[in-house]
Length: 230
Picture 1 (cartoon, rainbow, N blue to C red):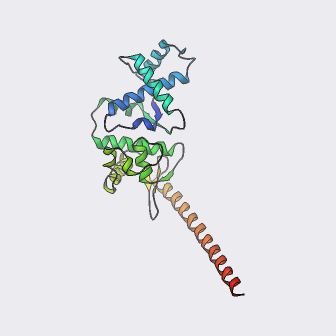
Picture 2: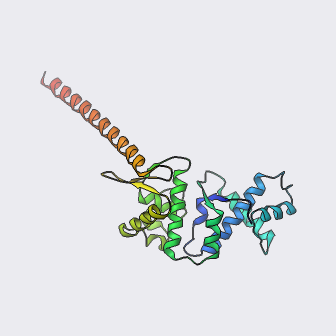
Picture 3: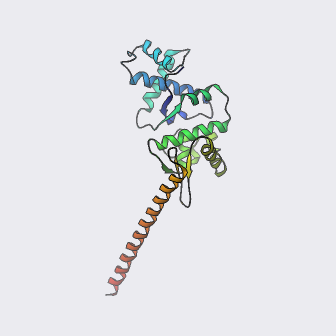
């Protein structure tokens, strides 16, 4: 039984999930245990026995503890700088680890983790599918579709993105809003009504600023024309 309700890890670790989900989940456990061990060095006495205790606290047994430790350390060292973090509940982790999942179910998990890695501590945010799918594929920055892994790329079309998003809205607690603007807004903390209010308030503010800028530009052009006539 795990003492930890959530596994927190860098979004980069989901790369390759559609190819070998079990390996990715094992890597996540290696990373999480090493991080807890490292962050609580005194509690675990910084020893091999302490690392074994950290494994027990996570409710995980490894056949090769030394290899698990080294892999966790390598992953931690490789992602320590400026890594967007995301959390997965222990229940969700073991559900995906122990049970067979369809590729769509795996994409739902990736889509959820990607959104949460972008949101961070924010209540809502605006993004586009390019950024979303970049994170789904384990990339920190937005990349072009051609650079995505082949399996993830297959879902990067209007039909599949809507299908995944609608499932996340129906079953995973996502709120999403898009109307007459580029990109879309998402939130896991706001209701759809509140999210729509904030999105439209931002859109109105942007429109007002554009109108003001257009008026100023027209004024400057008019004054320039008048100056030429004199």
